[in-house]
Each structure stands twice: as structure tokens, then as C-alpha cells.
Length: 239
Image (cartoon, rainbow, N blue to C red; front, side, top):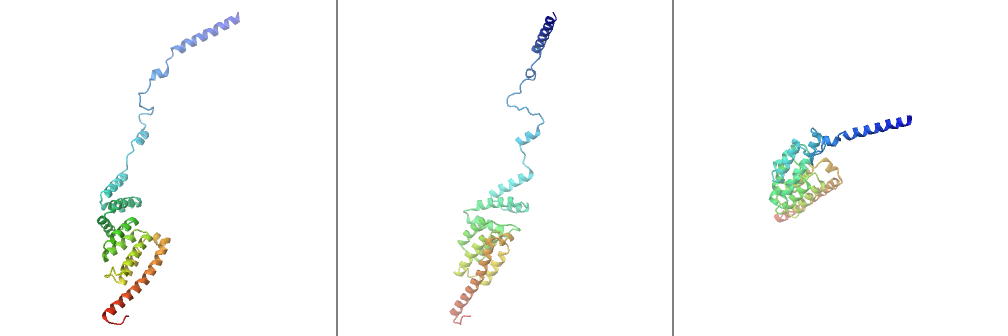
């Protein structure tokens, strides 16, 4: 009898639990589903929104403007980039101007003159090499001085050394008659000191020092040869 009673109570409990289970609402039926295309993040999840729509800082905007001006050939952008004291930005702007001038000798000379005449502006090996090509078309004493100046401002000892070599060869061939040996020697040595300390200490800088020592010797020899030639023309004994 007690066993039947226990079984009856158990069955009643199971039946009651089943009835309550069927009447309970499903949580997903009450809440419903989110519309398609929406993620389940909160309304004020600003970090996620900012990552999808990043805003440029004033500095980034200014850099972009300088780069665009350089692409249009605005040389003053170079001065402003230098004033920012951002070496990477300055080089980017300079490279943009150099790229625009590539293949146009007039633009190369204009850019080189701007750099040479600017305050604290620096050149690049690419600009110096392009100016060397333009210089070959019609070298003059003034363009020679500018070539050496811009080559030194490139802060590349090898680039400056190549300019020195070509200028010296032309002088020895009589192509720069207006420049005396002492004038040229002074020009070489004064421009050398414009190179950065790192450039002068480099391996190429060591080679350049040896080259300049040889240049002084060749200039002295060349000047004596020129003096002897002038003396023979005048009928005087050579010095």
C-alpha cells in the first residue's frame, strides 16, 4: 500500500512539472531576433565605431597637405617641412619635388637653386646626381659652385666626391678657364665642411679625404702648367 502511494505522488509531481514546462515562454520568443546587418554590441560602443571611422589628427592632415603641394611643385612646402623638424616628412616632400623635376633640366635647376639658397635646407643624392647631369650641358663657374654646394648638402660623401672629380677633370681640360686653381681648391674645401659629421666619418668620407689631398696636388701641378704655358706665349721663361 505504501509503495502504491509513493508511486502515485511521484507521478503527480512529474505531471505537474511537465505542465509548468510547457507554459513557460522561450526567451528567444520574447526578445526576438536582431534585424539583419546589426551586430549585438551596445549603443555606446564608441571604441568600435571609431575604429571603423578613424579621424585624422591635425598633424596628419598637415602632412598630407604638404605632400600634395610638393606633388604640384610648390617649393615652399620644403621650407615648411623643414620647420616641422620631422626628418621623415622633409625627405618625403623633397623626394616628391625631385620626382616631379626628373627629366626636366629647368625644374632640376630651379629646385637645386631653392635648396642651395634656403636656410637649413638639405639636398639628397638623387637631386645632386640630377643636377650633375644638368651641369654637364653647359658648365659655368656659377653653376659649378652650385653643383658642389648641393652635392655637399646631400650629406653623401660619394656623391660629393663624384662632383669634385668631374669638376676637376673639366678644369684640367681647360673648360673652366675663369676659375683659378686657388679658387677651385678653396671651393672644394669650403663645401666639404657642409657634409654632415656622419658622412665625413663614413668609409666613403675617408676616401673623399684622400681624393681631396690628391686634388690639391693636381691643382698645384695644373696651375704650374698653365703658368708655364702663359709664359711661353709671352716669350718669358717659365716660373
